[in-house]
Length: 240
Image (cartoon, rainbow, N blue to C red; front, side, top):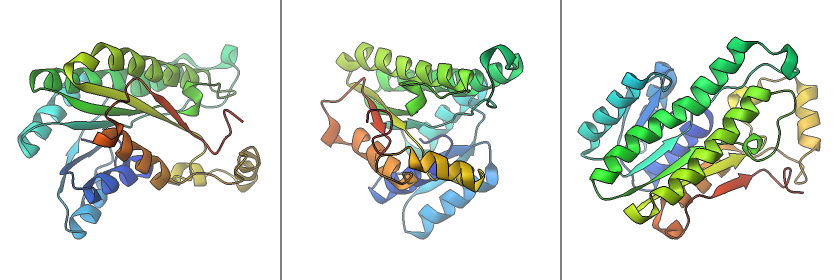
């Protein structure tokens, strides 16, 4: 089950998981984008279905997990990939509603998904979860106080759950992407993209596929001794 899979990292991850042999439930608030992801997966001969869900709403998340279990016969793997940023501003000038929206969707939404996913996995013998955090979850996104706080919270939830559920055969990790060439990122002004790219030691942005590949690894048995990990995927930017 992959949230935020109508575009960007979520879409790339859904396709990569399907190519790796998983039956996939694609979820998003963007019905058109989610269905296009499903069409791409099915056209390749793999299995996928779409379920609309606003992950900031508890009842919708609970229904998403129930519907996923009905569709697939269970839930072994989950990717929580929904998040929104706040407009760039100094903290003292930021709008409270922007903070509430960013934290509500990014952090609370991840919490709600994990809560429902873990309840099923505890009852059914285990599983693996990967959350999409951000480089802003381990360093600072300048001018984005809510996004920084929310993504730090996602890393915190990951580390907490990874340790708490390790003995119950459930692994929980997160990826921390840097600048990734998603549709939203590429919509930024060209001079801004150029500035961001010059900050990356590798000299380029990452691709959604590179993040998807890391998520597939973390969900696989090849990562069987990894939990509570916050994995930077940033071309060397945050730790250069």
